[in-house]
Image (cartoon, rainbow, N blue to C red; front, side, top):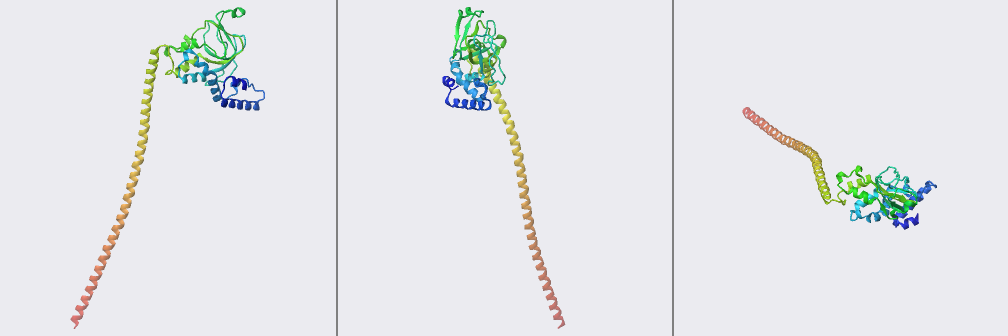
Length: 312
């Protein structure tokens, strides 16, 4: 495993992470199939490893040259590990979970004449023969057009041309038909992306995709700008609605606070006024009382003086 990672230029931090996961798996199950590496790695590690193994190959594809790195990364994320037996057309790929889909995948063969080209295969180990004859014996080797070996890719021209046409008319009904056979001369390991997944990548990354027709890119750009404008307008309306509700709540709370403060102030002023009024009333009553007492006292003195004078 260490030799394989060194051969494929896996970064040191990723190597350590992979070895830790392998040790943990072996501690849990001594008979675990560690050769089937992707079956024991977590999703995030699988994602990083696929990008390390496949990104350089994708950059060499002519139709992907100059493509935005976001597109290449998403293609890597959709790739699924496959293994094809030696000297065979019909092969079941090892069942391996792969991001972003959580389904188990099963491939029957790479490609045959007059059959749909429904996958693009990146070869990391092994050799595939590509020829046009329907025969399978030694005669087939005499008509080999080309081979796909380590770091090579099959199905890129057919599927990328298919998905790079008018996005509105890309359909599985118009998927390209193979004009050649693909045979695994040796055991082949690699990664494959289906036509459906490649179409999904092109749809999600349509703003960054390199279309055959420049007018298609203009149409996609205008459509995307229109969608973005409508989305932003809807967001603004929703934001205004939510802001209005918050302001209404804040206003009602503020009005309640004002009313409470006013009531408290009025109560304070009322109590203060009542106290002041009572104090002043008390003073007036006290003054009147003292005046009455003085008048009464004086009148009594006067009467007593008058009475005494008369008696004399």
